[in-house]
Amino acid sequence: MSFMPKIIGGVIKQVLRRPVTRKYPLEKSEPSEGFRGRMEFYPELCMGCGLCERDCPTGAIKMEFYPNVKRRMPKFYYGLCIFCYQCIDSCAWNAIKPTTRFELSTYNKEELRERVPDEEAPPLKPRKPEKRLYFR
Amino acid sequence: MSIVTLPFGPQHPALEEPEHFRFKVDGEIIVDVEVRLGYLHRGIERLMTTKSYIQNIYLSERICGICNVAHTTCYTQTVEQLAGVEAPPRAQYLRLIVNELARIHSHLLIIGLAAEEIGFETMFMWIWRDREIVMRLMEELTGNRVMSGYNTIGGVRRDATEKFINMFKKKTPVLKESFEQIKKVFEEDPIVRKRFVDVGILKKADAISLSAVGPTARGSKVLIDVRYDDPYQAYKEIPINVITYDEGDSWARMMVRVDELFESLRLIEESIEKMPKGDYRKTFPRRLPEGESIGRVEAPRGELIYHLISKGGEKPFRIKVRTPTFSNLLPIATTFKGETIADIPAILISVDPCFCCTERIEIVDINKGKVWYTSRRELSRLYRRDQK
Image (cartoon, rainbow over all chains, first blue to last red):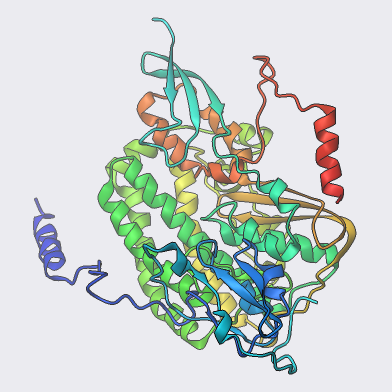
């Protein structure tokens, strides 16, 4: 019975310590800095090249034509997205930017389809690429 | 006493994935076993021929969730070899770090599951609590807990930050203490020893002739490790100690994994010190020349092989994947003979089977006459579709 004091000590230590689990919806769970969450799209930076659509592994991005400003912009289907961030890598104009938002569940399917409305579409302003592209 | 056939699976509480075993039992003793796979076939190899090399990085990652880093390392290595490009030195070291982190979390997962399988649920909870540290490190480095998406063709996608290195240095003593605890339990605890020692013995000759790989082979004193036999990337500069055990039973296979935890931690520590400064990514062509290449890496479960055939262009013509579980299945089927029914989970878990990795082909039983034919017309139609 020499191990009894050790066990009792261990039990008291375990009872008094802070629990490892977190009460998630009540307490905020902070992801780390580089966590890959939902992307943000900046229509005024987009050049409509379509590289994001070409490189997306799941087909979660479709380019759409906007007749009023005569240009193309991507439509995002977050239901298909696997958050690999290949579109961010492929975008030479930094029009798609990362965030750490991860709470994406919704009752409405339409919320998972992100498209710039026709009336908000900005006109195309050509400029030089901002970033080096790794796939040529 | 007559021989009874005992079906085990496809749906069974002791198995994580659907697979089917038919055990022929004489009372409690197993006389023979038949393995039936194919419930998880997803047609990934076919799908890979319809996507570009860039898209295939993420598809190869999804062949297996737990060893996703090994799959992408092997895929990118094979493609780089075909194009004649080598990743920059810093990227090679970063690949080593992320590979070894993935190995630690895979080994902790299977050791925890083994503890649960034998009814030692407290240890399962301990191990998975400490595994969370490794997952957090993975998230800090790659941006995700499991699906890392870290390797890319021509390097890696982000650099190791100062914050990650500090966090790793802070957590190393905690992890080491936890590993020592696991080792102590596996060496001394009577419950663990009773369930694992002298159960499912795989002889060295059998392991070689039936081509076992990874910790399964190393548990039977076979010196086989791709990181040692054919060093790739940064393993050329940081040599590893191959861990082998003589016993060849389930306990030895688990102990190889426990000792590899320490080894992986040492490799990460050393590579953080030796890591050169510079670029971590190179530009890479979208279109590849015609040719063939083979890449192999040491996944947590054993040797992983990719065979790539290119006929030029943006898409591969054919990719063949040979996963470690596929070659470990035959050796382990022989070890069931002579054991009791209660030992089935303990033997099965000691191989670390991953069936969703394995099932990209169908095994045909010729003795029973069950053969699936594909007509010549169908084959030529498939071939023509590939040509487009």
